[in-house]
Amino acid sequence: MRSGTSLLRTILGKHPSIFAGLETHWFTEEFQTQWQDPTAKRMRWTRELFDVDEGTWRELISSSVDATDLLARMMAYCTNRAGKSRWAEKTPDNILHMRAVWEKWPASPLLYIRRDARDCFASWKVQRGESIDAFEAQWRAHEDALEQLTKEEGAKVLHLEYEDLIERTTGTLVKVCEFIDERFVPELAAYEGDGTDHERVLRVTGKHSTTAEALTRPIFSSSIGRWKQDLSVEEVSRIDSLMPGRLTDR
Image (cartoon, rainbow, N blue to C red; front, side):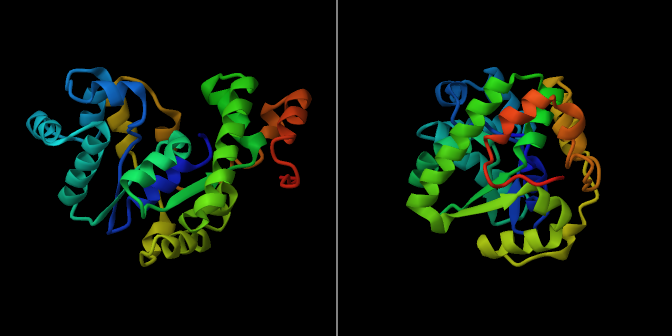
């Protein structure tokens, strides 16, 4: 979270073969227990964020055997509607549920993008107002999951760096396309911003999203090194321990 996952997802969604919508949080208790109730907030938001009409949604529900099957059918519907052949789902906590993903979709590649922990926490602190304890707990949980998954299924996992996506965009996206077995399209690296997500999130949820707002702009590097102005000496010292041997002087 706050590591460029939304930017990468949005860029991939520009690929002629890939449909990539907003986060579904398909693994949450809400989604898994309320999937048959189209009036439940999480399910209504999901339907509206993916622009699925209510009649089609009810048909998808009636054809599904469980919540994860509903996700698969919804994404397939949206993919076909967009004239594409593959779909991508981007919810940061997917890293904690990859065994369930691979049980349902065994060949799915996992793209894991990491950001300098100091900048990542600076974004959490300023934009989310969450504590350093919460950040550290989630960081360690994600990194531990990544380490184990890489040991078990390394061929399915690609490690990426936020700074590379921002500063070496073309090379990073070429690497991504090679990994997922898609041709590289130069237009992907020429991302100029897109306000679609920002408008949709605000309309459906009534909530302002700083992440969606950032996606309205072309790729920018001003967030690299933001920790220098946003973090205290004590916070930097504590966050440093999360990335031993990987810190820079940015």
